[in-house]
Length: 84
Image (cartoon, rainbow, N blue to C red; front, side):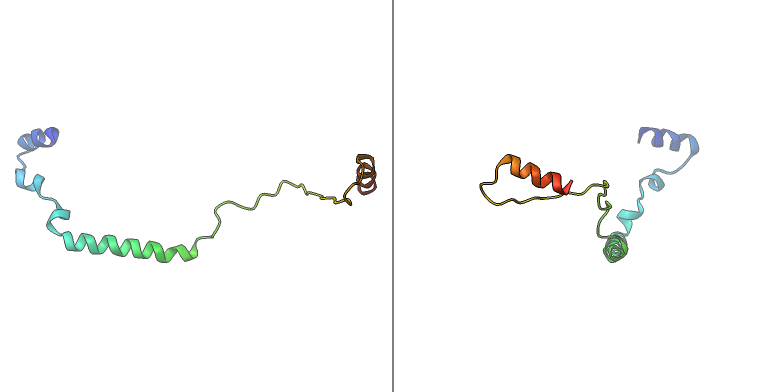
């Protein structure tokens, strides 16, 4: 602000022009414009994808093997060797 006031004295600009602010002079208009922008932004959310990150695809898959209860470790390894 000090720079503006020092410039205004050099450029012969009245202080009332510097102090006048559009937003303070037109509060209803500013509130309406901000509300319209907010409502339009909510309305435009329909066009945005629901997920921002793609589904991860690492080229891998998981195989789950269930053996009957009481199966030994060797029996489980034999079942895995048959699948692998």
